[in-house]
Image (tube, rainbow, N blue to C red):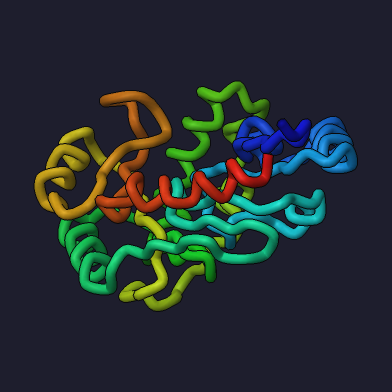
Length: 219
């Protein structure tokens, strides 16, 4: 059996702090692991556009991104599953109809709704405070979320997943019913304390599983 290990690391709270700061210890540990022949992958809810240059500069052997929507190994795309253009349009229209701010997560950027920056600020400050971030009350939306694009096209065909700010837990419950053809979850808290809901391709788990034989061959 090979001595090579395949290591999967989350980004937020593991490689980076919740303020997107990368500790020197994280860089050093990843570099040492790779220098010894081990394979290190980001395994994250982030889409590729959310990774700032200083994160990518650490050096990785690939990533699982967008909660499994995107898989890359040695600069080769192994799998990429988008929300369909029709599903994207439905979510955008539904959020607009309910007055919910949202962003579309794509490898080309995070495309925010009209008032997302302002509405997300207090929500993200609360979320960061729960995570123990110092001076969380001073954070701006773009301090927490890299790759935001404002004023971009919102009807898209390159979306990995969609996140929207919950005005109440009922928004999530209604989204589960409205988008029964998609996988709908929450993040930024547990249960009724969740800050966001997220929707992605319903068959994502099955598609993601197809990539695991590739990782097994690396070890």
